[in-house]
Image (cartoon, rainbow, N blue to C red):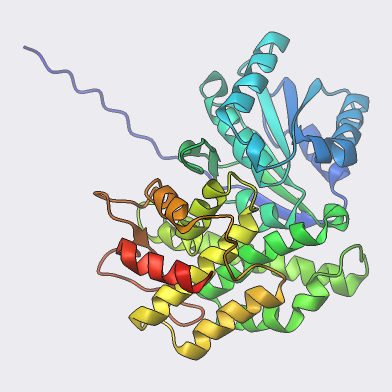
Length: 376
């Protein structure tokens, strides 16, 4: 018998830029001209049906006029499109069109697009580069940054995917002018979550300015400065975590605050409930559980629930989503260990609980059920 030791050691630099601006297509094209991603022959814009009509074909034509070899692929808008089947369909179209290793994907859209397109890029030809161009508040706050990519299945949300960092992220505040109230509220949901995790002052800022933040269609400097500030705070909070734990081995668990119940609600509703609405409900559930365990005071609990309500987000469960279905879906959460559901909890407002060397703790099914019943 002979043993051969295959020694592979790498030092990998996954650093990249996140640029916040207003009407950034020309900047994107200029960056591509200056080889932001080297050795690329072809570009695939991946978007959804809503964004394609608003922005996708404009970017496609702009790149064509500049002499780039580019195609555009669109999926139906909505969380229900973030599937293995849609990923495979685009892959087959790209293969048929002749896309190979010298290709780059531009993910133009919200979280559904950046999740699916990032996962596709990570697996296509065993990995090609991706640029994220976020067009929604939710994508700017969460999905376009951090490197998480995934698709959903009928059994679970975001369980099939990879962590792979983009080449660059563009956050275009002009695209927010075409967002409806529900999409602004979705972004606020993750933003409030970030404040609960790490920044009590940011929580107070959001509480004082939510009504102004929700004013869509404005382009005056004060409003743009406010949106830029919110984007920067989201990025600072998220990257203070991600840079310490890129692969979610420990600290990065805290970014799942509110998501254990939230993702289960999304799946139990068959994605009729949006991600932001589901996270809002998940945040209410965890703060009720946290209050019962002494992690937050009664006043802090009420303030978290009140700010979500003030943002126009749900804080009570609709009877259409059954508690037993939510509990069933929770066992598909990636934090489940040895059949036990794990939760991360905020500590007051602006800090997180630590349990020994972990940031999550086991919660019994009856505890969760009691909290959900209070939300009905």
